[in-house]
Structures are given as structure tokens and as C-alpha cells.
Image (tube, rainbow over all chains, first blue to last red; front, side, top):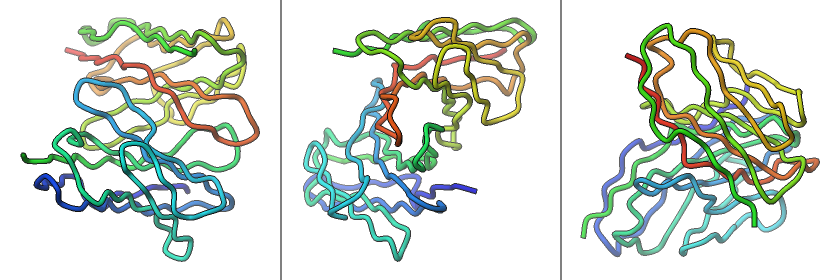
Length: 113
Length: 114
């Protein structure tokens, strides 16, 4: 069965610190990978996605993620976080059909000024 | 540009009462439509998806149902709500292609069953 695991449920960092949020997936066959963000009081937004090609994917707001097939991982990174990055981050995976995404449980990121 | 509307934003309903949440998409045709639930500590769970009018696939057995009476309208319903139905419900759409394209989410409905 497909599953997505996010290692940290809560992360607290200071501004300018580097960020890495872990995500591992279990999926048979072709996999597409996504990171979504939900800022306080707002709806879910797409940060970045991986379908194929370069395993290092760059998204909006300085975020990037690296697809490591051998580790079944798709970790999210940002070299220097800002207070405005405080949000809930969801990793998601999907196969090649139209049957929707499987989401991780989310990581609540708090950036302290 | 495409937009997705979901209402109501919040809802408080007693146990045993019916439920109807509505979602409409504008600016696109033949979208894939989805209902997700976000429960505390459990992340996002896919409830239903639809690839066309009248075509509904259920991912989780429960007392909820979904319908798609029009191409860009997706409705989540229940005849009798349970306490466990409380949560945050999200409607989403994606382009209908051969592979999963990114989802675009509505603002969600926070449902509290009392």
C-alpha cells in the first residue's frame, strides 16, 4: 500500500537557520512527489513537485527538494528560513493515474524571530 | 484564471443531522475533483475522487458520500453525521491528464459535530 512518512511533526527554528524536513514514501511503480504548504489561515499551496528528470527540484520562496530514489526520500530544504515560513508542510506522493495523492501527516514549522 | 470555491467555511452540526458541503470550480473544464479530510494528527486523507460527471471513487468506507451532478460541481454529503466526522474538509481539483498534476485546494470547511 502507498504511504508517505514525515519524520518530524513539530520543528522550531530561529530565523536564518537552515531547514530540512524529511519525507519518505512507499510506492510501487512510477511515483510523482510534491510538497505543499499551508500558511496560518490560508489554503494549501503547492511548493514544488517532481515528476522526472533532475532530482533536485527548486520551488517557490527559495525552497528545494531532492529526490533520492535509493532512499525513497524527497526531503525539503531551505538554506535560510524566515519568520514568514511558519506554516504546516505536507509531503505527498502519487502514482501515474488520477486517484489522488497520498499525504504525509504534516510538519508544523515554527520560526522564531 | 481558475478558481475553486468551497462553502461553508465553518459548520457546527448535531450528531445525526445531515450534511451537504459544496465545491465548485471555475475557469477550467473536465477537471478531476477530490474531497480530502484533515483530522488532527492524522494529516490529509483522500475521501473521494471523480474523473467525470456521475463518476465517483471512494477511498475510505464511511457514512459519507459524494456526488458530481455537473462537470465543475462536487458535493460531499451525509445522511446522519457521527462525532468522528468532525474535521477539516478540503475540496481540490487538478487538470485531467494521464498523470497526476498538482492539486489546487479550496479554503476548506471546518466541521464540528456536537
